[in-house]
Each structure stands twice: as C-alpha cells, then as structure tokens.
Image (cartoon, rainbow, N blue to C red; front, top):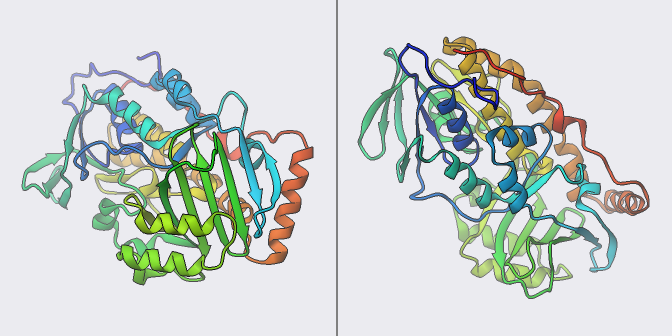
Length: 407
C-alpha cells in the first residue's frame, strides 16, 4: 500500500489496460492513480503537444487533499497566483465594491489554490509522463465493445484493444458522443455565452480582477501577474444558445461586437482586441447532466461526465476528485461494472452539490435586470464590511477514502 492511500501493483493477475482520452486535467490525474494501482495506462490527446496557457483555475476543498496525496501540493503553492482584489464597476465604470476574491467565491485563506491552467496541466504531466504512454496528435475514431475488451481504432489508423476506456475529453467529449449519444441529450444550457482571449497589460493591473456589469452583459480583465498579459472575458445573456455561430469564429466576433456596442469603461478596446486575438475561445455556458457515467467498459470523468460550468469555480476540483474516486473504485473492484457503480455512488452527490453553485455564480456575475444588478451591488457593498467568507460546504462535501484495499 502506498503512503498516499492507493495501492501499488504486485498482483499476480494480468495488468488491466486502460485507455484515457484527453490529456488536460482529469486525464493525467486519473492516469497517475491508475498507474499507482498497477494498471497499464495509455493517454491519447488530439492536440500535438501539451496545451499551455488558459484561464486561471481553482483547486479547493477535497481537491486540495487529492493534490497533496499526489505529492504536487508544494509545486502548486509555488505556482499560486494569489489574486488580491476583485473590483466591481457599474455601467458607467464607477467602482461599486472592491474586496477579496474569496469573499465573493467563498474559500479558505492559505489553503485554496489558484493557478494558471497550463501550469497545473504541466505539473500533472510531469508527474506521470515517465510511467504512462502518451499518444499526442491522435484521437479515437471508433470503439467496439462486442469482444472481451474495447477494440479501438485511432484516427492515425492504429488499432489496439484495451480492458477499459475512459473519456476525460471535456464538456464537448467525443468519447461521450460515440458511446452515449449527442451532446444535446446531456447539455443543460444556462443562458449565457462568453468569449475569452488575451491582450497586452496596458492598464497597470496586478494580481486582480476588474469586472464591469450592465444588465445581461459582463466584461472583465484579469491580471494573473504584474506584467503578464491580461485575460479578457466578455459574456452576455441569450435565452437560447446561438448554435448558428458556434462553428464560425467570424460570426462569433460579430455577435460579441454587436452585443457590446455602446458599452462603457474599457469594453470598446476589449472588443477591438478580440477582433485581432489569435487565441479567442467562444462557447456557451452549460452543464453536463447524465443519468449514467458508464456503459459497458467505457466510463466518463470530469467535465465529460459532470461539467459544472465556470459559474461554480469547481470544474477543476471536480475533475481531480472524480479522477481519484474512479481510480479508487477500480483499485477496489476487479469487476469494472461494480467499480463504475461504486464510483458513481460516491461522486454523484458531490457533483450535484457543486453544480448547484451555478445559481449563485450567475446571480453574482450576470444580473439580467437593473433591479437584479442593484441587489447584487448592495450585497457586494455589504461584503466589504462583513467578515471574510468561509469555504462553501459543497467544496469539501466528499471525504476521500482513508485507505484503499489491495486489488
């Protein structure tokens, strides 16, 4: 048994072979724990290399214990951004309130972590790259479960058979689509669209977020360092998802520019920068809600199974916890059907509690009417004079197993 709780190899039975689709967060985390429990793991990633950059993410509550058991907590503390201020502005650019980010999102000083997404991905990859096979620049084309395993044909043409396959390929999971059906069956649209991109930091912002609001529209600039590029965020309400622009970057830019026409503060400059940004990411805000996370020998983890949306701030933490619990279930149960059922029983209540945080996030970030915006602003002004918020119960609602039985 390892000091971190999960068992090592040593069983006389053949190693269980597992293919994981996706090398972002939940994929490498799951690969680490599966390798520790004696599995032979392959990770396939359609990108040609590890993806760098990305918006800052949070690691809180139960997920903090996961990264401690992985041995990467010191590295994440070194990479901690430590945002110091979140300033809210009204439609005219006047300050409404300026307070600690933890007072807004809930958290524990000195325990919660905020890191660049690319930094976390790199740390996870470094932890597992010498023990796990990675296939970059490839993806799954077909899955066939008619035999004793899962026969996989890759886009490259190679064919292999695995005991199990796990989709860790995000909200728009192709693994989920191939096995469970179209995304529309499981995607719960939350009423908002957003655009993310970077631009030069000419505003003098440092380790802080500045957010502008008008009814149904939000713009934010996020400085993760002192001189680094700014992360820009433009979001707006739409009663129905604009499916006609989701595959057309030019139409996405036009839609955002139209929605934010006439906005104040720094928004006109942000829209201009978006026009030329080479890293624009546009999507709808939504959650994945599924009746089951497995079918036969294929299971899902992280956003592919239970994406909570960025409104909760818990996507990364859910991914890390879910990966640990899936590996724990597979280490405990040689029968994959029993393992997948145990994983779902343990994680589903935790996922549901964290998905429910989206309602609070929407009320804070996206007030839809002038009245709702003023009510939000009143709450923010009160937070300045109240004690700092404590962690939300949902963040730590799942207790990790203290020890796992050997396989």
